[in-house]
Image (cartoon, rainbow, N blue to C red; front, side, top):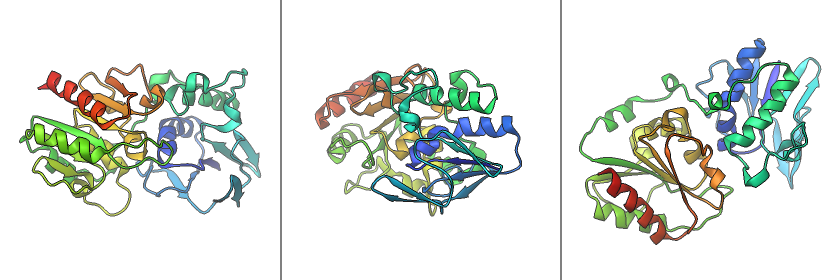
Length: 298
């Protein structure tokens, strides 16, 4: 059996999805499992991939597991089972050729992932495709689309802007997103602002992903689907923002505006989308950048 595993967060698992699907196709084994501690529905569109969250606990970075795995090993073979680590920080970031995948602070970008999987595919003796092939891709035939389809068919608004306003687990950038939304939604009543986290702001042109999607449990794949219908996507690197980083969105009529300390948090700088980066982490700077982009689109 093949066990993929990742000891970190939703975005980490999402970034691995297309690599994992390609490995599954090329190895052609009978059973595949993904071991992680996130919601079981994060990869629900990969139908023949089973889920197990019982494998780890954390104690000051000590990994306690029923499985023969570690944070830093890449591939472990044990009793006819193969365990493949999909965490980007494994092996101390070093490739087989002695190159640091994290050079220039590339961290969780597609570029560093691709170099990781070059080594994994080589060890597994399977060919790897070109980098564009591995842009995350969600099969939306297996997500809850009905409520979203009804919502986006409403032609009332000139533009839809998705703002990922929840706090990321790993990128600590303080930003008063409520202030940003309040200013812009008042200025542009014909633009719809869709937020991933509830605020106290009540306007006809403000909506929330929870209300639109309206399902119990994990809705990250659904947020990815909803993002297809938004012209501008704004956020700090987090789970919902990562799930918008999909093939359907790296197109010319889409804009990503990433709030971060690292340009590579835009994930794929060679995208056809307009990839904007906010270095000045103030609410007014963000307002100005979104405002400038709106004026070009309307």
